[in-house]
Amino acid sequence: MSLTLAEEQVLADDVRGTPKRALRRRLMIVSADIGSLVLANVVLQLTASWFTIGAALSILFVASFWVSILWSRLYNSRLVTNRMEELTRVIRSGVRAVLVVAAAVAVTNAETDIRSLVALLSASIFMVLAEREFFRMWFKRRRRAGRSLWGTVLVADVEGGKQLRESIHANHTIPYNMVGHVSPDLANPEALLTKVLATARENNATGVMVVESSLDTVSTNFLVRGLLEAGLYVDLASALAGIATDRLATRNLGPSIATWIEPRPRHGWRAHAKRAFDVVVASVGLVMISPVFVGVALAVKLTSPGPIFFLQERVGRNGELFRMRKFRSMVVDAEERLAKLEAQNEGSGPLFKMKDDPRITKVGNFIRKTSLDELPQLINVLLNEMSLVGPRPALPAEMAQWDSDLYARLHVQPGITGMWQVSGRSSTSFDEYTRLDLYYVHNWSLIEDLTILAKTIPAVVKSDGAY
Image (cartoon, rainbow, N blue to C red; front, side, top):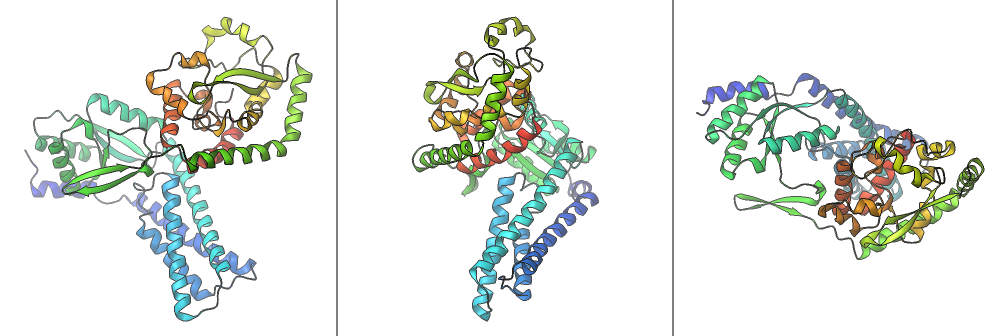
């Protein structure tokens, strides 16, 4: 049975329309964007005596920047769900605005210079990104509290629905609230559409997520078109997993759609650039932190008997073993005591973790919480045994328990920090740690490394999962 035109219109009236609170939030962000652009201009006008862009060109820049933001759909939260996507669109909007101003300068012969244009572009991008980061953190807190979520009906079989729910639950940046679940095992596409629309209306949902692998092509197309006609948002959950969205591009092949996936080679100039970055940062870092390095070494030596450094065999790139360096944070016979503590293991999988481990010294507890015990690994970086960013260096005993997929970690060097370390460390399950490491290996880029390094500082300050 299919819906009549009148029934579809009633449902569209129920689910179309943005709620007033969502509209107010959008207007708030629009106002904040415009205010940030104006503020950047005002600050430059008041503080930089060399700034030569007049009021008329400044107004043109602000207007062009904001129109480009609007055109880039930066107010559609369903399109902008991560920092990198937002960063790219904001930068492109700023560049377009500069080109508009440059064209105006060429036509009117207005007096300005390249330095002023660069300063205006940089200050404006910084202000907009800073303001949007504030909103991002605000929305994240609201979503953790169960607010600012998108009421969504899930169309999936039991297994596909279970996996998707687990992924959404584990990621608080994804604003879905699954308010209904429809199994696609109905007799025909019309019956499935009727059931999904009725479920959306009953639960006041504004969107539907369809797991593609749960339906055949004919049913998927019929369902999606019917949902869109009813004014619902539609998300298609792909069978692809562990691939960064910035690697994907869609194109039409006649009536069909193809998804192109950008390769991410780990060799050539990218590998040389990563190594050069590692060497420069590790060298500068060791010089800058040398007083801290010496202070921690003295604290370890003077407060407990034993060596300053703890050397442990770990698995490196291509399965080669190396000796990872840390400041010693445990008693000398920690390895011998481990067998007696196995029953109290709080970690998952082959990882041993214990919050109140009696083997940790007083100084050791402090340097673990602050991650100061990791500083000697900069030496491993200089020796080309580790990288600044990469998968967690595994123990040989852990590797013996890996499944076949996890061996992909050996394609890259292990890192001092990585996706696992900035995602909760010890509080992260073994399955999650595995997934994060594999995601990094398959999607590595220099931008991803810089992003992880930027996230490492707040993660260390908060000491999330560090014990």
